[in-house]
Amino acid sequence: MSAAAPPAPTPAEVRDRFRRLADEWKEQSRFLSNTAQMALLRPYQRIIGMGWAAVPHLLDELAREPDLWFWALEAITDENPVPAADAGHVRRSAAAWVEWGRARGLVGA
Amino acid sequence: MTGPDFPRLTPDNHRVTSPPTTDYNCIAWAADDTERWWEPGVYWPIPATGYGPDALEAAFAALGFEPCPDGTDEAGWVKVALYAAGAFATHAARQLPGGTWTSKLGRREDIEHDTADAVAGGVYGEVFRYLRRRTTAPPPRPVAR
Image 1 (cartoon, rainbow over the protein chains, first blue to last red):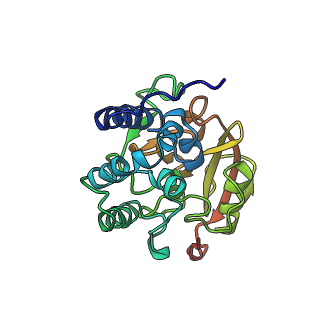
Image 2 (tube, rainbow over the protein chains, first blue to last red):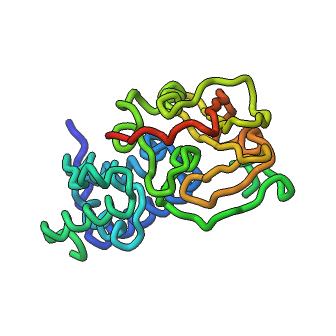
């Protein structure tokens, strides 16, 4: 006998969970430079675990404040819209992802 | 910038020298780049081999740095200190003319600190290698993905 899946979270619950995890990750990773170490922090892993439900929030977050969310976005979407010439450039990478999201109606949704 | 993350920093042995920014990380800063966040497989001087101490040392070797015994100030050389905690390379600091050091602290500020050891002992673990390069060395070669 398998356990019943929990009820699907409401949009407000998803938003609040993302916000809480994002804030936790920013606090825990504030002095880190190694992106793998940052991505393995529990709040970041939990955001990846939210799957596509986290993507609009990640994109809104990037539009508001560019940060190292690219690992999570690539992990969830299996995409990388950042041009090779902009690799490593945080603001340009954020802009490329926001543009990618706009084209799919995922930004400000 | 003291406390458990930096148990060896004191108000007297470091000075904040920039505002916080996510534009670049400590590895970029140690390599004199304030435009990019250096990351294996994304923006790195050599093909990515992981995120550990060996990968960080190999990246600086590709920039012309060679191992040296310690972080003493040597005329004609610029030095970097590489740090690790467990399996992760955690930090790089660059020596300034005169022998003090400069570090970018993750997404936070740059600081000048009196010794390389001053930022060790906490979130960055310990220095595992000192490297040096002639100050007359040519600029770093282009960085590729």
